[in-house]
Length: 152
Image (tube, rainbow, N blue to C red; front, side):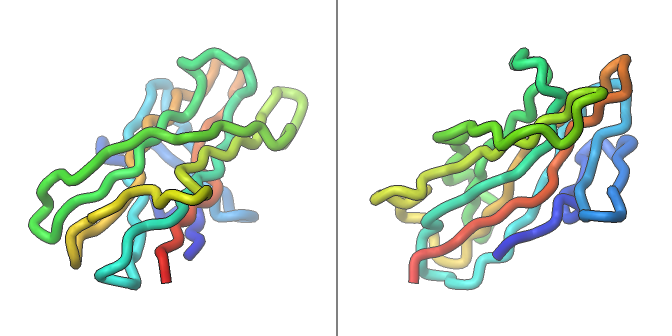
């Protein structure tokens, strides 16, 4: 399943805007925000095989300007199972050049191993992301799309 960034929600209830043409969610605030991006689990007994989140960043290469996400798994009671960072960060090109906005993919697994093994039946998943603040030049960071696939 693939989801638009507009499915994400700020946990602080701050300023975020949906970009109408593609459904991305962008941080318009002058401070960073933490967002939760929910994932629908279809196979209650299968583990997640692959996860990816596509984001927009300002392209400065400074880690303080990069979106930071964890893939989170919880039991059906909300108990912590795992929180893991991405395995790959890959710049996919510029969305615009003035001001610079970069398209970046963060991925989890995708090889021979699953993202997580042994997640409890009926547990759930989501991404928890810290989205950088709007820059002084008006550059916005946010989530364009995200996805997760399960083993069949």
